[in-house]
Image (cartoon, rainbow, N blue to C red; front, top):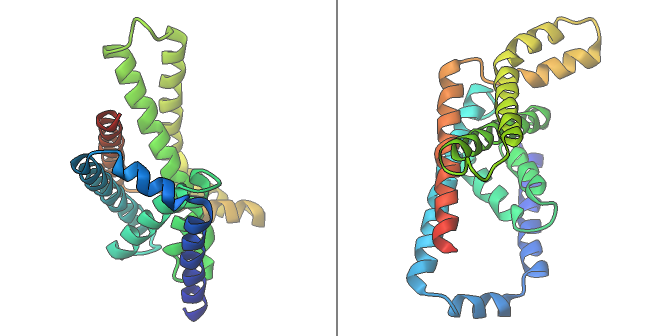
Amino acid sequence: YMKMFLLKALVSIGSLALLFYFADLSQFSSALRSVSLPVVVAAAVGYALTVVLSSYKWFLLLRAARISDSPLEAVNSSFAGMYVNCFGLGTIGGDIVRAFLVCERPSDVGRSVALVVFDRLLGLSVLAFIGVMASLFVLLSSVPPSLIAIAMLVVLALVIAGLSAPRVAAFLTASNRSALRRIGKLLEVVPRNPAVLAKAGLLSAVFHIAQIALFWCIA
């Protein structure tokens, strides 16, 4: 536990170091002075609420995978991941931090990373579904039918993959090959309970729609 604590502390210190290395604090302060204070406050509060919503989804997935049952850890790791996303490596850096911070034992790191990958695929399927709905009801005249069909196939493929993951995991863990057994162990993080999957998908949809609305208001 002490080693994990020290590693997490190093991650936090490294994140702060990234802030002071990449950010131009003088430009940041001038940019803040150029916009309305109520807009800044509303945007910050709205964004924080969407991250809290995403944290609850992350907590449901962590609890279902038996990696962590601490809501506080889910919130902390989600905010830390969003923070790191502001710097290099895009969202990959934030996902690595989010997966790492919830681990109580080094043996949980692989399963936690696998759960992050599943969370990303879930978000991708939800975004594709939102795109399909928007294309059908709002942008039908300007979106090629082939693109709509591709998006629908992506949604269908990801849903089938998510629902079949537990069976695939059981099949692989029974294999005689150690590499396949390890893959099966990683796939076991996918929730088996349909109610958890449905709730996580709904939370993901609300999160993405809220962020789209928030960015539209800021623009």
